[in-house]
Image (cartoon, rainbow, N blue to C red; front, top):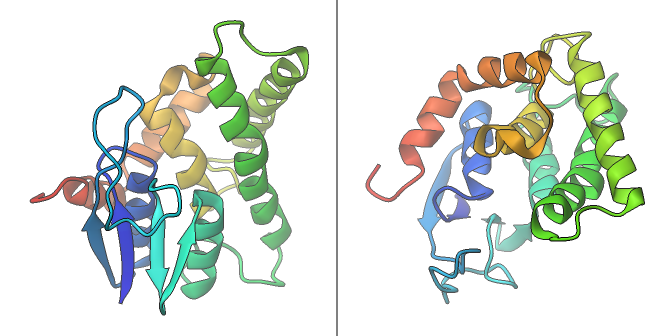
Length: 197
């Protein structure tokens, strides 16, 4: 059984959404974490080395970090249309989106909203390029990979669902968020987000 270590309304919420899209058989282990507002506390039952989420356990191995987990799960459940198969057309594009999320979006958005001084010139340029890349891709299709919804949309879109001001106002981005918000798997994931849900 695939185990998901999850704290409600955190980055692990999008992992539950992905698992619902994949039709995966999984078990949620709810854990507490130290939250940015000072509430909560690290949970000894959480196998994440930093006591954060998300973390999954599969075949006795703990895997952490959203981008890594997303790639792993898409490969674990091939043929679900959440990612092109290894070697298939579009796989490199999918990998590039996942890498962009981990290497650019998370660090730049985190810096933008945690730094009283604002972004450095390099970070500001990365932020502008990221915004242009997202809106450019969505101007040519309903989703990041064109007309096909994928796990990349969950990874990027979940940020804007929780924190729309992370990126500038844009009807293109708003339309994308609306399409993502209508996914039945997201509704199922939200129903499981908190214990007892």
